[in-house]
Image: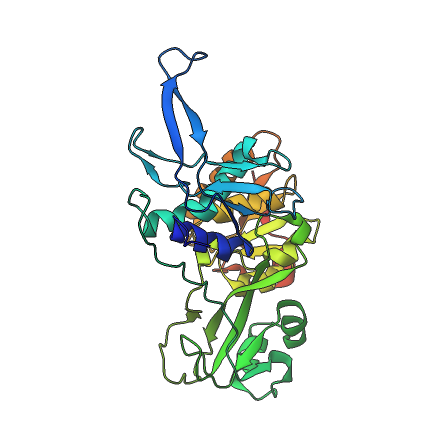
Length: 357
């Protein structure tokens, strides 16, 4: 099997979908632009040779036979039009490529990394570099389940002082404490370790119970010395793409109540299952598509920190536009006076928060 004509696209597909099959290996795509008889003054493409294609199982339907085909030219700049070829894919199972939302989702998952690393026009090279294998993210070593810490431990004191139940954090959110780690990057020693899970296929509801570790965050314990690393409040695993993840997504998917959009993991802990955290105040394109795809019809409540009203309103408007008419309510929550973020609230205050359209 020759090396892929577009090794970056191939490796990105491997990272996103796992199994990738190649058809017409090494073959160039041949197409000509001809006048479109249905649209005077416009042009269309007539393809005489599809060229090399990569086949994966479609994440939008229940395909498990690799019937979604993506051209090696997907996302590459077309010199004739000056635009990127985001339309060069086809689902031969349920025609999922005909749905606009699906096109946006696939573009979000594949086009962003391609544009960063593969902006030039793809040629038929004499030799290509073999695709790099995606690097797996693993949890640090030296983890202790958070509920197993003695009551006198600094992490236990910190969490209980904020009103969190350690057994709940362990059982529901899989929270640990990192006593030591040698190989993890960045160093997470003496930090609260927060795993971030995602569905095996981000946009497939059928795989909602199949979880993959998308990354982890290590939270500083106030007053507890960290060893061999940054003293930032939160550290994120090397290789973790926060903009492609929603913390708490896998728990929210299996529920049926409102979905709360919050900033950070501790906010999600306070709200409980059904909350998803953005890892900040901004909603990325992929995060928006995940919310639209996985929670059709369910009420979404945007509940950011007290100082982020402008960002919260922008997220509300973005989600409303993405959902479209009849897609479900998107509301804005106001925290109680004196509370700067949901993590500072009591469960009763969260339940009684004022929400507005």
